[in-house]
Image (cartoon, rainbow over all chains, first blue to last red):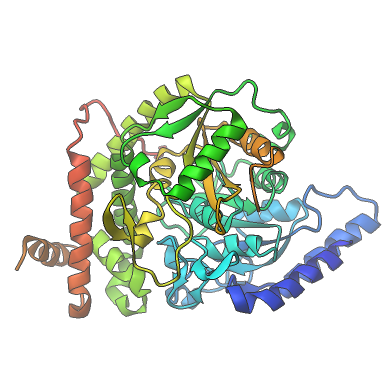
Length: 440
Length: 58
């Protein structure tokens, strides 16, 4: 199949399935056909093709796409001019030969875990369209889970790649903070924002992640390091890796039967019995959320003053409250982040990889407000991120792996590695895939 | 007026952020949720030599 045929097939699938799942807010058909033609022309000339030549992909609609308005899930951003150039990682993927077919639905300004967007409608989970696809990168995850595209890009501040990957039953990676450039990615919480891809296989996930890498001085948080590809490491096995299962307060007691099954199944496949204590999991989440509230609101302050009625009702009141937090809470939260990093350095002296559930439970029905956890009824939207927010706050690389479920609905685990050791997390994910422990 | 309501009203005035009446109650509820998280965090005995790690580079 040449690039044009492959891309036309993806566009056809999108036309057929998007009304059912609401993954896309923009389909870039003209650009896709042009990029596919460029790949085919290169092939015809006998030129060397990139590793993603002719592979169709989609991006969360907070990535800049030249000529397209970067919505970031909002009504307010519709008033922005179209982006003048592609985001850095979109340029990287284009250089690798990938073909952009569109931009995907998300929570307004990436602020939430369910993609029940007031302005653009809810994205539905391809495993069960009555349920959430997760969020905030719900459209990107659902587009991959529904087989509309083999890879897509999301972003993760407190879990927005890992939560939808878990609920949709696909792979996703949140790399080390500072690994991938966020230039041209509409900011939510710059202290915590990460870019990253989704895929249905570890090979595709690794190929996309590898192509996205590279130093970029325009994102001041992006470390100026050369690309460190993980694809060559996928088949290396796990014999030399010390793997532990996470345990601790504010984690163990919140795991559902489905989450316990996923962890048991992964531990069995990996032959893991060792456990490691999660340090200060609840306080890390509290600090992550306080930084999120204040920093996100600061970026929105001008519009909160001028046009509060144009926000999604699910985000507006959080933005308003976040603009009012005392400075002392922020300073303390940032100081706690430094303490937490040091605490995890001790964990990584004893383990190369730590396994934890990505979500405490499977996807719940759209519109549901609360869920029962540890004998209490708690707000559902924030509960999806209970196990992810402390770890993006930490900034370490994590691959979400869809473990073969005990029931009908998927649930993922987090494969957590030390900073800059994405290769360790990918090797464990690939091992689980080869062992038949995953299901996509 | 509750302490949370008084704080939201005063802080909103201090940062010049008008809060329309129809959003006031939910804003207070969100602030109180943040305050509960802060209480949980601020209990931690953080040593004075632990500093934030900003990426500011002059």
